[in-house]
Length: 179
Image (cartoon, rainbow, N blue to C red; front, side, top):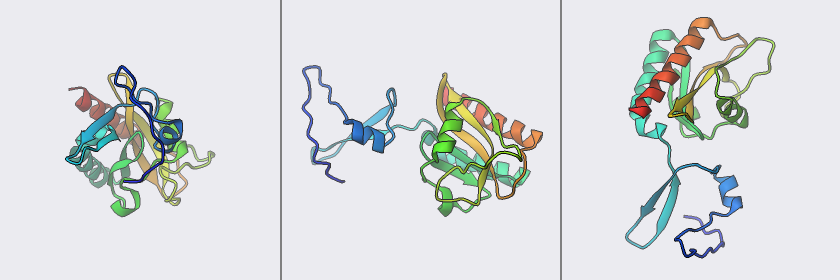
């Protein structure tokens, strides 16, 4: 654990303010759910809650199957990082923070399909040779909780079939979270 040097008092309603610098660094937005943990040494730990993270083993199986059957490179992400991938080296993608371009595509709440004339966007900043071909946000109870995306290492447009598969995967995962 890293000390920040910031001290906050609890108010009369039991609230504590998380400083803006920490919220910005940790990408905590207004309305984001936080899990609260305690340990035997009296520490209280806030951790960003990822509803899609609850399905991580299922998401991994889904991504692997989609990749194997359809021959696509697939990632499944929560709002901040990659939680599952298929057809890609896991060490290059797993748990890496999403690029700002990917975050913008997710926040748009609509299907994105790359066109050949457009500039490419990467799903994570550290891997530049795999770019987003198609991306669909995962919606659960009206909230954006993540995305499913197909990636490509060539300059090609997303096919109609690829778009439908990614859209179906995102819708299915969203329904799983709602049930």
